[in-house]
Image 1 (cartoon, rainbow, N blue to C red):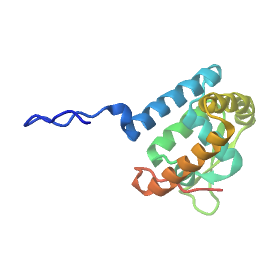
Image 2 (cartoon, rainbow, N blue to C red; image 1 turned 45 degrees about the vertical axis):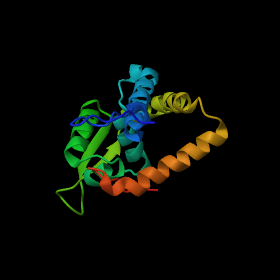
Image 3 (cartoon, rainbow, N blue to C red; image 1 turned 180 degrees about the vertical axis):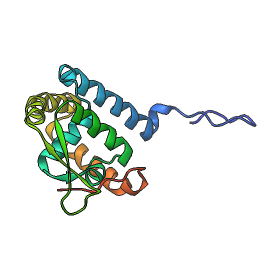
Image 4 (cartoon, one colour; image 1 turned 90 degrees about the horizontal axis):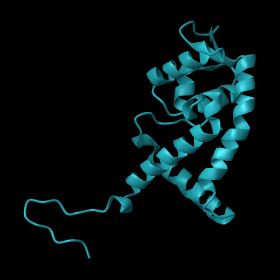
Length: 162
């Protein structure tokens, strides 16, 4: 039974029962595990997402990359700037639209991605470690349902590139 409400006071809520709080906590844990596994490579989860997406779609422009990894264009520009300054990405002017910048991985970017993938997979295994194979499948199914259904509520909605 919930605690009694006194006049002028909000009803007490246990934050551990709120999905948003638990999603935020899981995000913190996920980032912590990612950085634990990939820390020596000096790459963040968002940088990994950018590198992997560019590897999967060579020549992708920055705006499309931003939509694919669900970031606003200015944040994506900063991510690309950092990866370019590390020598991992190259920006080229699009022959079709001189305002657009197409992105490609450099040899250093491909090497970094090759080194990152095994550690990233270990991180995913650690995150899902407490779940059985059946629970993992169900969790991922429900997670995709929540993300896909609520995508329009994001400040930077994603556009799938599958």
